Amino acid sequence: MSEAAPKKKKFTEIANKNFIMLFIAYTIICLGHSMTSATSSAGWRAGGLDMTVVGLIASAQAWAAFVIRPFSAPIVDRGNKKKIYFMAVALFTVVLFMYSRSMVDISWAVPTRIIHGIAWTFISTVTAVVLSEYVPREDLGTAMGFFMVSQLIASAISQPIAFELANRFSYATMFMIFGCIVAVGCLLVLLTSPTKTPERQGSFFSGIKLNNLFAKEAVMPMLLNICFQGTRSGFTVFLAAFALEDLGIANVGIFATVASFVGWVARPMLGTLLDKKGTKATLIPAGLSFALGLICLAAAQNMVWIIAAGVFVGIGQNGINPVLTTISIRAVPPERKAAGNSTNYLGMDIGSAVAQSAGGLIVSTFGYRMGFAAFLVPVVVGTVAAVIVLTRQEARSKAAAN
Image 1 (cartoon, rainbow, N blue to C red):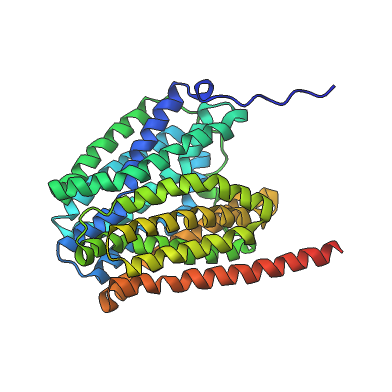
Image 2 (cartoon, one colour; image 1 turned 60 degrees about the horizontal axis):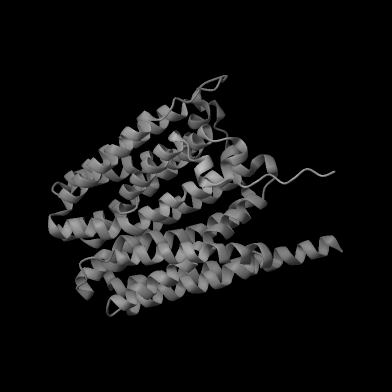
């Protein structure tokens, strides 16, 4: 007689005290993080900085993340998760006050972005690990599904609120307010139950090995992420300044709101398409949608164009990310999944850093619209290259099966 399938648990059965505090804390933390690139760049631009300089400053966060990422996983695996999480969130809280200071003293800008990159790399690495300490192992997948709604909430509302505060008061005051809000999240992390420090042999850094960090099998999704994630990070830095200077729109946060909600609606359908039709069938429409979003930005005349761009980018982003993650994990043996995923994320770091640096130069030289149009190149090249590579892989798989 077969055993009954385990009953899927409800939110109320998973949401213990630690889960709820961590969910609220992470929502608050993401609220502070998801608005920083757009608003800080707009604030520095409003202070008179050239967009080339703004792009270079913005890229410091991604370069810092690229350098620190090899150290984050072994430190988290070998240390006390709660303490590491608290220190990372506390550091991020300080970063927001540093952003406020950078609005009046630009010499603070580069250190702020570097420390932001370090803090966020640890936060993104350790959050799910801490959550796993507070829910049963068999319920972790369901818990993560509920928990990641926090990112949607934060990305949907953070930028409209941030730009409204900046327009009413100042960018410096806005960052001070967000710093105080994130401090509440830091306190909630402190109030969660302690986590155990695992027994270990050797130092924190003895687990850092090239084989555990980089997987050559996942180079293709890494290169695609340089194209796609670089584009997403690149145009985000310049969007607020473009909307204000070319269109007279003071609060362009609606773009992030639309992209977030459309992505949330589209994600289940894109996931089904990925499972049923495969990576190529998902990546092509996602890449085309992403390109259409950039065309809307390059041709934008009013808020309607901005909203349309948010729709297309939301669909594209939520179709591309799962595909590249899936490819990177499937490309490696089961025991090296972390290395495959890490390689994929390295593409995000490199792409963000390069796009923000190069994007600033292009925008300063040719204007915002040409800058958005230029970002079409890596998206189109990435989509075409992915189709070619995936087609060849499918042909090899069929040949091997026959």
